Each structure stands twice: as structure tokens, then as C-alpha cells.
Length: 88
Image (cartoon, rainbow, N blue to C red):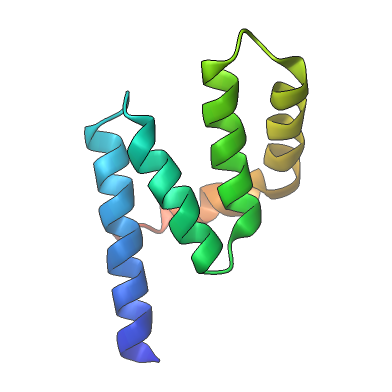
């Protein structure tokens, strides 16, 4: 599993680097959401999809409320995990 963990982390880092390099491209964000689903992180995938949908909407408050609820429930953990990227 050690090799799988390294591969998974490398894939995740690749997606995040692409997102950072292409901040206006939702395609890579949606591909990352699909990848997250495939790796057991469906809530984080939903959060990304909701954010992308909200950005494309005319200010759909239902989408904003859902993203906010997910951020409230999981944001602290996600931020802590993101802070660990690139370390080690």
C-alpha cells in the first residue's frame, strides 16, 4: 500500500498543481472531483462541483448554501490537509 499511497498523493498533487496553474479552467476541477469520487472522497467532490455550478449560475442561493454547509462541516479538515501538501 505504500506505493499506492505515494501514487495517490502524486496524482492529487498533479491535479492541484494544474488547478493552481489554470485558475479559470473548470475542466481540471471537475476532473479532480471525479478522481476524488473514485478515491472515496465524495463529499469533497460534491463541494467542488457545487462551487463550479455556483460560479456558472446567476447567484443560485441554494448552491451557495450547500457549499457553505459543506465548508462548515469539513472545511477545517480540508484546510489542514491542504496545509500538508508539499511537505515531507
